[in-house]
Image 1 (cartoon, rainbow, N blue to C red):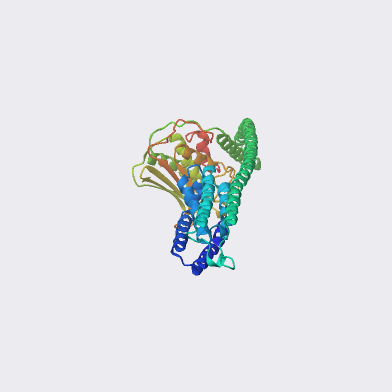
Image 2 (cartoon, one colour):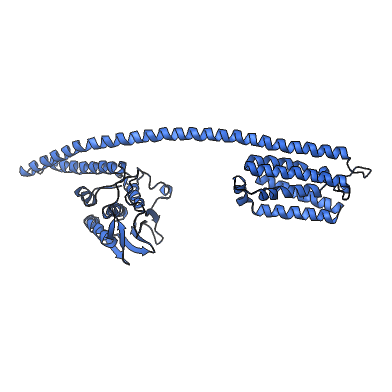
Length: 445
């Protein structure tokens, strides 16, 4: 429609200029100018008006405004003998096809009334709407019979155009409704299947935890027996590797189980976020020292926040572990805590490779990870916990050089729905031995 408009408008303006050149009557100039001004005004407001035109709140007087430019151009360029008359048919059809029923009906009525008003002007004889270039060879205007026939046929054509467009639109709407219903059914089936698979996977993961615990215990016993017997052999080293791998498998299963559970309600209280962040930093000082890294904490202002301390600490544990995994040896991880109007922002900055451009839109998808041994659940779980607090978590590439900035924003006043469980995912207790053991050396997502 935009292309047609830009092609048709110059043609109509050219026709108007030709007519005005052949007959520069004052009334013809007035009608052309009025049509052009109204058309230009509608063109400048086309986008907002087009949206409202398709809705039920489009006022009748606005629909009249839409029908006026075509009617004025037809009248100024020959009335019922104007070559612009087919544009009225196209306007009525498009109005019914794209607009609301009330707006389309109003536009069609405007066109029909304009036709019969033009017929009255023709028959009155005080003004000759037909310009000299469209008159017959002998200069005589069209006869009354031809004019009445033209007005009647065009009126019927406009009504038929409105009806055909309405039926076309109803058929298209019905097809769209069927497509939407089919999509909803497919999505419902997919959702049910996904829920079944998630439940089954969680049950399998839960069943695997007990055998792994048994394997880990037997490996510990065998290793202790080897130490008692003084057998520092290759078998003892292999048992140590076995225990580390079992620990890693338990961590992965624990992450998956936490991710597949619904979020538990928050236990909200006033928390010193700087102190909580310092505790999370202390928890990772050991692994940072082993890797030759330095963790620096900077607090710029008071940071009392209404939040769930356990879950907020879990967010920080996830982000710090990711930053330590990404930071090259000899660099460090900076943790900044600062106030932002009605929220507190925590930034965890590293000097790693940053977020790959091809993964920027998928970094928070479950299972998406850049680590060789990652499971891709830590970041989605951290963001779910941040959003449960009414905050947000985002990852950005640093502007002052290579590295990634993980930014958490927490509202000072706490979440709006602190006690409302959702269908997102929960996490571990950051103070639990299992989580502290992972923070001390086991890989995370």
